[in-house]
Image (cartoon, rainbow, N blue to C red):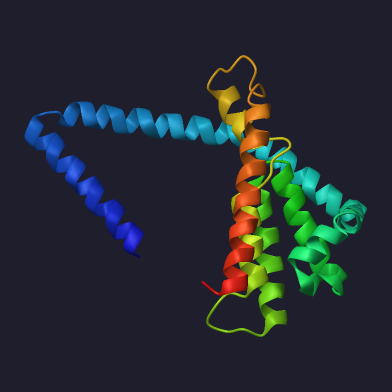
Length: 193
């Protein structure tokens, strides 16, 4: 609610300033150009997002997520103690991590919500997120990306000659942000800050 009010106030201020400065025609043209660019960007990204969401679904149905969950058993078990005994929860967390590794925050979101809901149910906490649900949110927010598909789609739609030339920078930044996020989560968990 507060965000919609804030956006409404910002739009009203922009319209008022444009009218008082005599630039209402330029503002209208800018709005139409911006809307056209937004639709073009959404359509260009839709194909890539659909492709990778399909890949994630194929991984789930083929049992690859269970194999990935087995491969990630130790790190997932260390960060999410509840998942040590719950194979389905471990699979949900592994699927979320897999989607993030592919740079698909869009596909990872429903998987992360399902895993966080299970973590919350297991913890029995009400009114506040459990430590494990917070850690899952941290991992999803600073997702380590091996293939930044969404960013590459945006760069490609904007005419980049090589949309994947940013890979080393993406890898470095996501590893550092993930390490710092996990360290902060563990620190907050330990000291209940």
